[in-house]
Image (cartoon, rainbow, N blue to C red; front, side, top):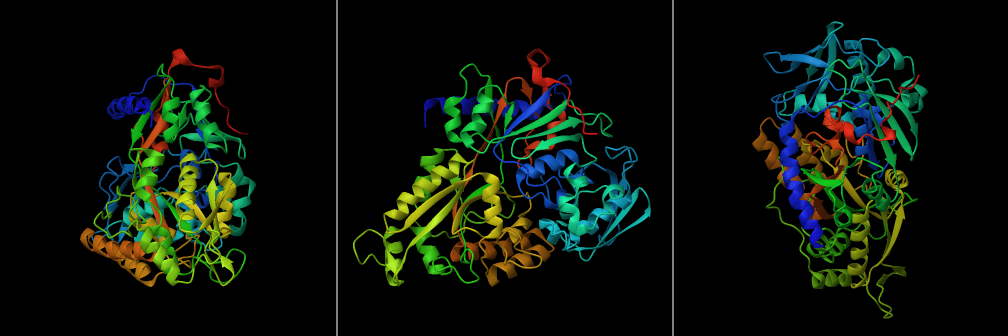
Length: 554
């Protein structure tokens, strides 16, 4: 990595400290923030918002009842920030929490936000016909009631350490007066959802899929209007284009700088790197089902084969080559920043000799000397799906391709744009893929990512891995009543995932956003960089023609 990277990183350390100290005093109002994005939102409907880009857009349009605080505490309600709910209190048995809605809160069409909107959202989120990925998170909610239009009581089945976090972090109130007459099965494609009316700091303006999405400031926002006049997301499928827009001054913000971007940052300081914590980890996910066929995958259904492939990949060398010091090898299906993380778990070692012996013993041998292993007339070969928007995943794929070739495995890399990548992943139309996930502060999401596919779990388990020990221990962890019990169960679950190797756990990146000097940003929350966008501002002396005031859609 070139020395310029280290200079920018040193500067970034100063920037992040300064940013964290500014709070809401971020300068004058006005200007339009342009975000350079490597992926488009797949949905503007909160129950269908899976990726971080969809979450960023929907959470600027819609407000939650309360949001996690800067300390990212998920146990109890300490540190949570009031949003649509201005206050709440608990029943003595901790099985009911009562939210009092802010009477000033309005939908973007002027209608008041009421308890009916919260009850309607709960119905939608938990309806299997809607298929919300996060509906399993609400299984502990027994019912909702409302003694008056501005009061909502949430009744839980049982007490758990994260019951408050799980409810408010998952459920986003929806405008019942606009959506309740639409059949739940038709909501995802309804015009009212495609042109959303929310309750948050920004209004929807327009969306050209995979090109541009525009939001405008909500001047009537109950918590005070945003400092920005609007936000525009410019979408580019290629990672190099995403960064080039920022460096050329065509955009103001880039969520994540890739390692090659640091050397390209302007020497005049027009773009700076801002460090922020992350909950990200990346992996190679094996598909245990053969694509297009209802049968086990001929290679990856076997755990010993998966373990051998894992041991053949030098993850330490890979991380160093792709990231230099800007990432660490991943441990398992979690991020080190999560409170249940355990760095003492036993990992599969890098051991080419052992990997070779294992493949030999399984009958995968190179009998004709062409450098490729075969068994029963089938080559030990597979395709590796990679999103074109991620240069780091592309680089990692190329290195793994070479490392696996050295032991007689042929890997064909398929690069597709991110939306196509997501579509194929969801359909199981892949052999293996280089995936990445931004986890939540809570470990709860691991059940959706890696739990056995079925009702209530595994909605994003695209590889269809299933492990009874993992499932049982995760269930026990999420039902436990003390943090220590939660950690003990997750330790066993995580070790089961490492040992059974449904994936090669690749890396956890250190995150740096790219920020143009004309933009002043607030603290970048590790799980949601967009959480403070309403407080960001554009320097009046550096305004551009694109800073015209955005107008909301009629």
